[in-house]
Length: 342
Image (tube, rainbow, N blue to C red):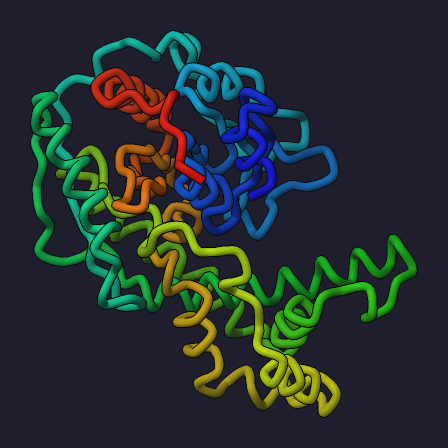
């Protein structure tokens, strides 16, 4: 969020970011910026890391303009000798895609979520506004009868990997810094504890189920170019909205002290974590777990004059198509000069 705030404030034209569950697209949505998460493997993470978060995370940037993000993507992409994947090389540069006509696209629209059955009206309004401008530009907009994936099941698989990788990251940081548990926030320690309590078979099962999510999304993309959803299910949250109440923090501390994470890992607490932590952002993890490219585009401002983005999810390697469409939308609904009245 700090990088996005710096760009939105005009301190820098673009800033580095990473996205393991939406952390490029969500801050971009909250700050009225453009944010593109690239396909798995397009931006190398080496030489130290091969596949951050099991391939779900990638580096990138947030920027005010599509042009700047495209130019930075040209700089960031390309294989290294230790890359686990060989990304497809585009015929030209991503910067060249800006201004090129995207063609007539078939866009499937979905706002449904089994994690959050009642998205905020402003999130729905953002998608409706995006659908309207897409139609004006000649694209085919199709309302989906149901989501192309089960986001609650996907969220469980996502968090299973997240917990385990959190435990791994904490252990790595301890080894490198000599720190003990006191060097980590309580929430981080709790997630790491749940990760250590995860059955290894369940981790492998979650990884294997990832391929089922890929197949279902590929079935959708066989008949649609892009999936359109809200980026977030709510407008930007207020500062402090996610602060844990003191009573609950004491309860968390008690759980860690009692070392009962192994018992809690397989109770409804995980479902509660999904609802509480992903309820306002149920749409973004799909692109991470499946490795597909996705972007948040700032096409809507709320009645309180706050930005809220819409997300487009493309086929694997469809960054060029996303950039062409984003540039077309930017020209039709310019956002560079929009500022909230704070």
